[in-house]
Image (cartoon, rainbow, N blue to C red):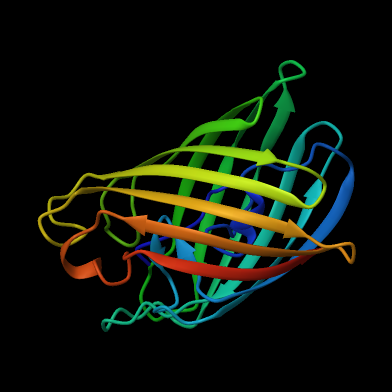
Length: 234
């Protein structure tokens, strides 16, 4: 459970995504499916470095309000019973302040098929300006009886043409409990560099390099790695 999603990047659909953090402000229903070599959330593998199949549904109203759900297989390993499935529900309101500035406020509820109560609710807010995003996620209980957790993140996404896009991400996690991440750490950074290739068939191919500075218990699951994905939106 030591990871979740929040990147509004194309590559995030197969790496760190899950619940979308920026919804299209139009009256429409959409769906997505992804096959990824790993499910990485905030720099840490959620599938014990194994492959993941993921998908979700979204509804966006032309007023800017949206709601959706997303699911993935998970495997936390290390004796932590997170079950085999994560199912998230999210919603919020997104809109434009000007032609180059937008906002998104909402929530993400992370649910797990598990005998242990690992579920938790995050509040999230982000501002988009030109090709960049700055945002934060906050929960007062990170899992059952868990600590407060704040996640601050910045992204930059640039499309070179209709077929290739670059995604950059930097995140900072602050947990209100000493040694929560192992190695006496209550904070850590994660970062990502990714490329997304769009095909004429509407299938997106992603490759990303992701890493963290985590030490201790989660060091192996947070080590540098390349993640590959193939995704399709409907």
